[in-house]
Image 1 (cartoon, rainbow, N blue to C red):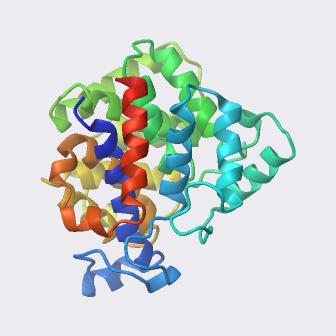
Image 2 (cartoon, one colour):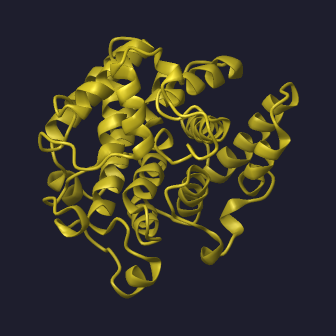
Image 3 (tube, helix red, strand yellow):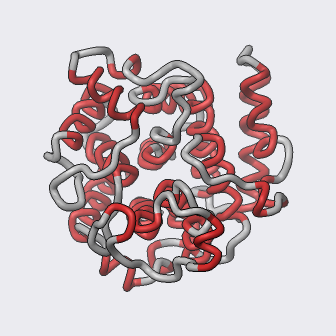
Length: 312
């Protein structure tokens, strides 16, 4: 995999940074004032190229995986980030989800990491989906779908433990793993549907929950109209929106701009779609000016290299 980890990490962070200045803006507003370039300030008053908690927590996960898989260590990195000591763009945290903050406070109290995330139906924000991408690279040689699901469940559950969040992360990871096999994105999507269906056959998950994923798993999410795609902070919306943007675009740039211009949770839709597009199109397909403008570009390159050495 040539520079796939670097492509994924930059793909995620640039999608995130493109969305930060317009987070919470409506789709109507962005139709009239579309994001076409990376810029600064806006919603969070951050300089150009600033990424949010999405990338920070993904980098914290990648940092931990550079030393192997250790749930306690991943959780400790999240605390370090929260204190401003690890993987912030400029030394302080300016954006954090309610569920993630609550989970980090549980970690700090010494609770078992995979019991720190919320288990209730209201705990289904996109806070674990936005940071799950690095786990793909750790799992890329794993052929046992049961192990893949188990690891995804553990890592998601640090902040988001409800089945819906876990299953959204699982579908995303399976799709990324298919893309890493050098498949066309539509073929990879079809294979993802088949793989997840096969996995579900031996499970007794609540059908009311699994049916929520029908638009992605039974139908073709790319065929929906834009007004049927939502871009809130709800995990299912984020999963659908990221797949939709990726499948309906022909380049990295088109994917992330489409994602950001859906409005609302712009940084996270940009990050999740950007991770997919990054690993599919490669680092060379990401506009160099965006890489140059990104906060801590050299540190991200260094992280990617260390991760690559560990898992090549």
